[in-house]
Image (cartoon, rainbow, N blue to C red):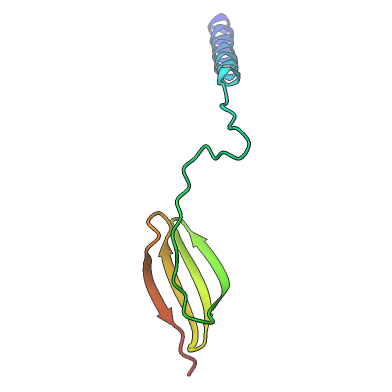
Length: 94
């Protein structure tokens, strides 16, 4: 029984070493200076005139922007995968 345990432990260690050595074999493609290897996606957000972004919060694929506008504060919720504005919430101070 002891021989089986030692043999199993040796097999597990050999498998770990084998998998770890394969990680070092992967070649990393270096991009030339000034080139981007991943395609960049850009999107725009139309802000009202004079509006500023006071704060941002990211949760999963949703971005919440706290905006200070001339009509008062509001929150814009944006889907970062598509770049679309999901909702705008005006904050009314009563």
